[in-house]
Length: 105
Image (cartoon, rainbow, N blue to C red; front, side):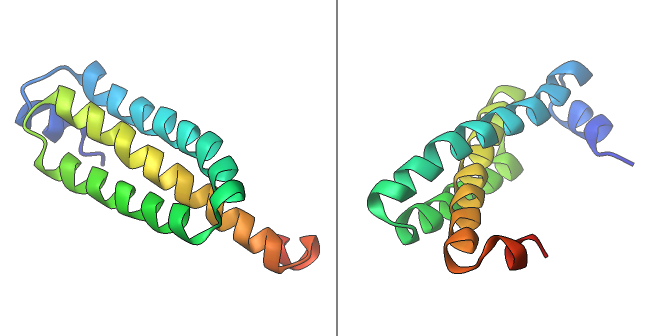
């Protein structure tokens, strides 16, 4: 069972706005992947990976403490952005240290 009804009640909002939080996460994740990979190619892998993880964590904390649906949506974008950047960099690291065959397993 999803938490959407509880979030809707807790934040006194509509179900469609709560559903928008999921969309916001995926938009942020896509943007994070688009920017995280090229940035890691320019400055190295470690800093973007750690930064992405920290941004995702801060976004998650913000989500947990969000006082309104607008804040929750904003923090979900931030969470997705950090997670997307970290995921793109992690994938780049795997491809860098392995050949394509073992990376797929």
